[in-house]
Length: 230
Length: 230
Image 1 (tube, each protein chain N blue to C red):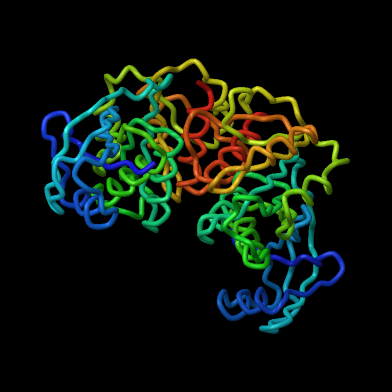
Image 2: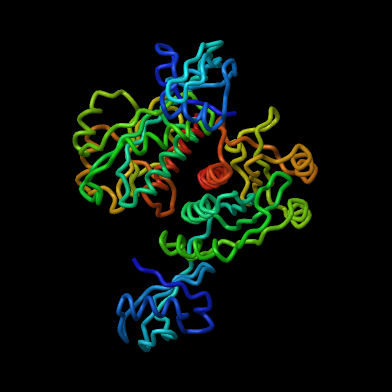
């Protein structure tokens, strides 16, 4: 099924330029044709095209339904990889598997100091449509590790920091949290000081298994395990 | 840590051309330098270079240790994706996370009729070294789905077929198997007939969650869950 993305579908019955063009020019849809939209806010729509405008195609909503609620809220905070493809790949796969919020963090050992959320948002939209979901995860711009911790100080989610340490428990042992945040370090891992700061802010040290994983793999393993343990 | 790959290290104390060149020309290692090798068969070696030959660099083994045994044997049989990058990505990530054998299968809805294992073997070797493992998974060439089933008829592994079906149980419920095979379908999914054939050969229908996953994502989710439920 082909899904179009119309973030303001409830307020404004018109497709944006990209979606209009794809609908009218590429797929050659006609007035009266029925197509399906999502708004990235959890709503699916069945709509009828009111015109064939290639830039501002209007529609009437025929029906609407809410996406099923997820059993667990998953928020992943990850240090972007040096290689852009790797973190973009993570975003695509995480959206497919299920993620509610992704934060990008700048850590002591981060090689990336700048990161554009706009690019990954396009990837997230495409993955959402491809996997027939109606909710776009919140994508937060790059912030310092300490800023992230202080911004989430009052967040009542269960908090985890992925770290290979003798005191780390297996993430799969924490299967009762309905709302969680997990921190995933950069290629050079978190510094001891950062882990300490996280622990002081009530993050539990957790292990993702025995393998040495790349940043984006660790983030995806965490995403998979947190979705499976619902 | 830099690892070199020498599949015949126990019989033949010499690096192949690629590894010799990397060791001598790129990393500029000298006679007497100590480097680390894996043989892809579960052995790590500490060796001393006997010469600086850029094509056939010889070494003496100083010490050797076995990789820790895995708690569960994981064999994933997957239909290669139309886009080569996607299946190559799966192989890289599966090796990082942990996999013992990967089979490539040609199904009714497969778009790929040919598939080169040589290319993915290079990726697997690189991922093995990068994740500091010493065992290369067995990589089997593309065979017909039916051939795969008949070849594994007497395999006493716990067998699963990933399929979205009302009778499918969650893969995470099968956490006691120490040796398992899972079948992952192509972009167009397995045909009903194929699922039926698999069920007749004692494959259990399992679900990988509620999301519609691409082939390579489904294969990686299966790999992650089978590694986590040890």
